[in-house]
Each structure stands twice: as C-alpha cells, then as structure tokens.
Image (cartoon, rainbow, N blue to C red; front, side, top):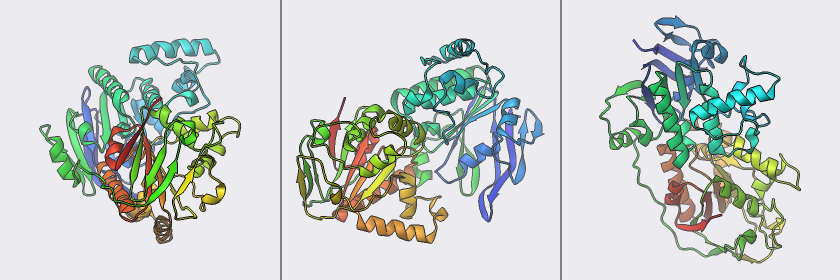
Length: 448
C-alpha cells in the first residue's frame, strides 16, 4: 500500500461531473506523474487530496487510514503539501516571510527568520536573498520559490499541479533536480502535467481523461502519449500574401523596424522573460522613449496603469510578472483605417477604435469554442461576443501565448492563427519561448 491513495473519489459542481471513481496511489520515494489535457479534472483532484476542496464521493487514505482533509492546513499538518496553479505567494512580503508564513517559525525577529530561510534555501540550491520582496522576482524564480514554500514543512507527500507549464530551460532543469532530491529523501512526489515530455519522466504514470484515471506502463513513449492526446507535436502557420499593414522605423526606440503585412503572424523573439516585459513596456510607452514611440499595445498600457503611477512602471512590471502565472495574454485591436499606415512618430489614439483589455489566451480560445474542457463554461452571449470581436478586429497581440496551454490547446491556437492569416488579418507574438516561433510565419529577434 502506498503512503497516499484514493478509492472511488468523485467530485461534482452542480450538474457538472468533474471526475468519478478516481483511483490513484502514491509511494514514498517515487515520482508519480498524472497526465492529461486541461479540463480533465487533474487540478480539482489535486485540491481534493490536499485539503482545498472536499470530494463528493470516495475516500482518501493516508498512511493506511481514511482521512477527512477539511483544509489545506490540516493536510499540511499530516504531511501533504501542494503547489497549485493559482498564484499563492504574497508579493509585498519578503522571501523569508512567504516561506515562514503560517508556521510557528514566523517571528518578529527578521534576522532569525532570514538566517533560518537562508540555510533552507542553501539546501535546495537556491540563491535567493531571504530579505528580498517577492514582487521583484521573475516569474521563473517565483515558481522555484513556490516549490520552496511547499517544501519547507518537510512533507511526506509533495504535489506539483501543472507547474511545468510555466517554466522552460534552466528553470525546468532546476525544478527536476529539486524533485529528484526530495524523492531520494523518501518523499512521495505527484506531478500533474499535460506535457508528454514530462509524463515519461515518472517512476509511475497515470493518465486522466473524461472517463477517469488509468495507469500506463513505464515503457510508454512520448509518441504514444501524443496519440492519446489526439494531436500531433508538429504544427505550423503558413503565410498568406497581403497588403502592408504596419511600417514603423525604430519601433519604440528599440532600433527595430516593425513591418507587418496582412496575412502575417510575426514573432518578436526575446531572449528571456525580462526582455519580454521590457519590450512590452516600450510598446506601451511606459518609459520615456523618443517621440516615435508607438503605443501599439494600448490595452496593455491601460492594464499596467491600473497598478502603477504614470511616472514609474516598476510596480506595474511587478504585477505583470507575479500575477499572470498560468496563462499567456492576448489583446485584440480594431484599426479604424484599413489602409496601411506608416509612422515615424507616436500613433494617435484615434487610430485605435476599441479599448479591449488583455485577456488570457485560454479565455480567448474558449470564447471561440476552441478550448476543450473550458468551452462549456462560456455563456452563449459571451461566445457570440467573442466571435463578433474576432470578426471585427484585424490586429492581434499575443504575449507569451503558450504559457499554461496543453498540446490540444496549442494546436487550437495554431489553427486560430492560421485563420487570422487566411482572413487577411495580422498578429504579433511577443515571447521568449522557442516553441512560439512555430506559431509564426516570420521571426524578428529582439535581444537585450
């Protein structure tokens, strides 16, 4: 028997059955991976076995005995700690305060708190200053810090809900190293994911879909998982010849010339998340660039200004990096004039007709009926409005669009971008993700 298992677990929200008869078993010292697409119920299952949500049927067995997990605090007291998709850190608190919050180690002595957390971070191999405010951290570092927060209580069971959807490169490697360290220490680790590359890393593998949970053999290959997901890892967007739409020299004083034709999907490829934010700030004129700064992402500008003074963008940048954890963003823009416009000075507000705020890519796809598992949550009026807006707009701005998307939703996004090109609209993708390049018809590099 494993340290934690579920038997016949089920959860409903009203008439909506999220999952039923969910059976899964976790063993100490092993990495268990629960794969499946977004909307299959993985996150709700995580919340039912970590005290955040009560199940409607079945039972949770911990160390051989049935338990009623009535709260996250109760689960942590038993030794079950989870990292959820939702943002759990407190931006205005320090690293030490976030890690110790809610524990008996939280004291009025900052020196003692910092010393204790410093030793713990050193054990994890994280070079964070315990006295630094979390709001100053990049999104990747915040993910690693969330791991530290969950791990500080020395849990017997550690659960990571779809955390790999938010990190790439060195951060992903570091996360795997920390997981391996806890495995070797006898901790049972559960990772939920929609990424076939991560699924095959488990010591035990389960797959969750709308019919329930089933175990998979360890010999399961990535290609087999792609077949189970019902999509191919290969996708592309073909350019469609069209008239020039935008021609701007030295865009926002970046030294880059922005030339965009209808039927194009342009990728502005950045070297890291900081570069993405800086370039977005440049486009929104959050910084005093030269007179030809272009407020092309005016929706993003409005988004930032709600959380910062007009004279300084640091707080807005902190909000952007810290609160948008689990999704990319998109802004849909309708230009008043369908003709090409050329500019060597700032665009006037009159060029932009609608002032739609930034929305998540998931919501964007769901509104168009392209997000399996989420479309049913949209009201008919919202769906109609989403289609009307899509039809009316001719410029789409995406910021790190692949964050939080599973392979099925990524394929859906590629299809929507192809439709944008086919209908003589245009899109700009600003991202530091290599895979985002596959969504575009042309790439423009922007490096610090």
